[in-house]
Image (cartoon, rainbow, N blue to C red; front, side):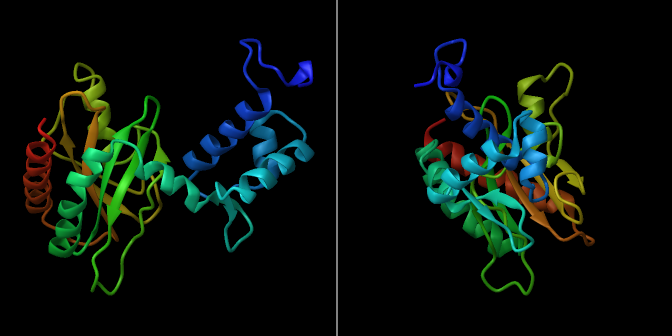
Length: 222
């Protein structure tokens, strides 16, 4: 390996950059261009093109219909292997919530830096749904599930609420409601729904989410 490709701590600089590309794309609310990635990483575009080509070949990155770069489906398969017992317990609850509330329901957990969607379920017969793909990441400072996780990380500064709600914080034109999912030995998590903004009974939705969260805790044994 070329010495210039070795990080100061002995790691691979190329691998580090590839992981940073995934992180940057995952955190972005919109598809990114190679130019934007090159600027963010402070490297030449040709290097970004090589990184993207490799990530595309392995399914970690793909081009959106507009030509921008978004995370590929391979990321979802990796997310499915994280906290598997929690995901297994949450799966039927998410499906039931999606049908009951006619909204996309999803499980979010903290990975040490961001709020990451681990699993989601969309209502089967709703005319309009909002997709929430596993592997999607966003800051804990944005969105209802992020705020729920943030309160678990620092309850002194951000006192826990029975539920959190948000709109236009992660995706424009999308609203969300989330409740805490606290399981001993697991990272801070949240159970949430997203939907196109309209008049809803937030209290009722929060009650359904909280009841589902309680059943998940019992199923996991937390």
